[in-house]
Each structure stands twice: as structure tokens, then as C-alpha cells.
Image (cartoon, rainbow, N blue to C red; front, side, top):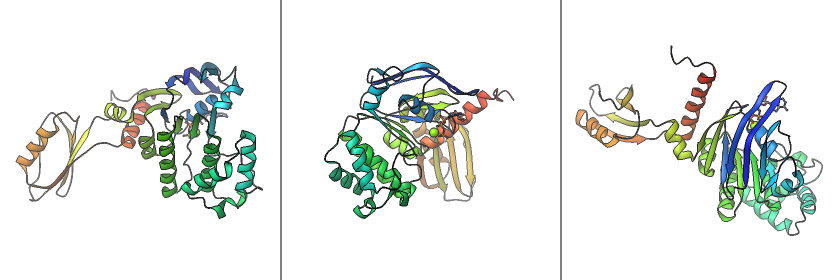
Length: 312
Ligand SMILES: Nc1ncnc2c1ncn2[C@@H]1O[C@H](COP(=O)(O)OP(=O)(O)OP(=O)(O)O)[C@@H](O)[C@H]1O
Ligand SMILES: [Mg+2]
């Protein structure tokens, strides 16, 4: 395990930001931290990257303790957040040249132009001062800076925040490509579920400073939201009813029907049953997305922590 987080706690003036979280990440793994605003994701990443001290608990990065050996940890990790450390009055070339000297990278210019181009930063953009950059451009240059430095461990805290959809897709594609080629260990936070599902091998869901679920995105979806959905349109004007214990509920809009199943176990049988009952023009089976699963999970956790009104 290249990252070991044990029983981490952090309080800010009475707010329990982290209430004892533990997880481990293997070398080369892309691990996602998911959770609603204020769940504790950034606090976790800050502690892991030695920017913040924990109140209790330990974090080991590549065998080094973040509190006892922060220097060693800093050699192994790099962090990308929505904030950057660039000098506004210098051009992108000058900024990267400066950081590359710091990291002792010689062939930075070629790398910069290459990574830049793949993210949509052309040479003329690289000539501009950082003060004239848009948010998205700064984010891209931040990733470029990191890729040039090339640390084995990378923390990305909402790296695509502020990127337009096309840039954000380019960003995830480049990341994916790099992760497939290299043994980088990545901790990733994002509110974009598409990205999370696309990039992360495992995810932990945080809520109010605690981990409420950990697993592969697929398994997590199944566990949190086992419901499946059969959708179809009937050709006739007749209504549609189906009584079966596997059916959770049915929604309809004109002659378009949605049959929500409690799980996916008897799906074929139910499709046959539907086809025997009515004439359908099109029929498809849908799975919940990670987003739906996440929303449901978070809502459930919220109602639990409010004392749970489930008995009402
Ligand atoms: N420097 C600080 N001072 C006081 N409270 C803080 C500080 N940093 C974080 N907190 C509190 O700790 C909790 C966790 O915040 P954190 O930034 O880790 O959440 P997050 O999961 O990253 O949320 P988001 O999705 O909005 O980025 C919140 O209640 C926040 O108000
Ligand atoms: Mg955050």
C-alpha cells in the first residue's frame, strides 16, 4: 500500500471536518473521494499533502509519515487544486521555466508544448502572462506543470472545476492516457460523476467527515442503488399494469412507461411478461448512473444523521 490513512481526525473551531477516516491506496491505483460540499475531501487531501496537520490519526505516503517526514512526502507528491502557485506577471513559459529549475527538469520546454497542446494550450497562449489567463487556462497549465514535474503520487482536488465541457473531457482523456501508461497513484476528487466513473478504480464516499462507502464504482452503484428500470412505449391506447413482487413502482407519461424493479435479478422474465401484456414499440433496460446512486446514498445518509424519519 503506497498510501495508508488511519483514523484521521480534524476539527475546526467546533466543526468536525474529519471524524476518524481510514483507507488505503495501492501503487498505481486511481482512488476517488466523493462527497457533498463540506464532507471533508479537501481537508483529507490537504493533510495528505502536508499542507495541514491532523488532530489525530496518521497518514503514510510511500512509507513516510506526513507529520514526521513532510519533506520526504513532498518529494513524492504533487497537488492540483483550483488554486495555483503561478506568478501573474510572468508568462506561462517563464512560470514553467521557473518551476522546472526548482524541480531540476531540463527538457521542460518540449514537454510543456506537447502537454499544453494536448490540453488545448497553443504556443501563443504560452506566451501570455498568467494575469491574462482564464480560469480554465490556469487549470490546464497547472496540470502541465505537474506532468513535467512527474511525481509518482498525484492529488487532484476538483481539477476540472471551471473547465468548459470540451476542455474538461480533454483533461480527463489526457489524465487517463497518462495513468494507463505510467504507474502513477492518484487521489481524485470531483463533483463530475462522469469523470469519477471514467477515471477511478475505487472510490470512497465521504459524508460529514466519515467514510460511508468504499468500493469499485460498479459495485458501489449496485450496492447503493440496485434498482433497474425497464422503459418502453406501448403502441395501443390501453393502459398498462403489472403486478409482480419484483416491481417497485411504475411511472407513465402518455403511452410511455417506466417500470422500476427492486433489483436486476428477474429482468428477462419481467420483459417477457410485459411483452405478453401489451404491444410495445421500443423497450430498453436502464441502469442507474453513478450520479443517481450518489444522490440517493447522500440523501439516505442525511436522513440517518438527522435522526432518520424513516419510522414515520
Ligand atoms: N480552514 C478552515 N477553517 C474552518 N473550517 C474549515 C476550514 N477548512 C475546512 N473547514 C470545514 O471543514 C468541513 C470540511 O471542509 P472541506 O473543505 O474538507 O470539504 P469538501 O468535502 O472539500 O467540500 P467541497 O466539495 O465543497 O470542496 C466543512 O465544514 C468546512 O467548513
Ligand atoms: Mg473541497
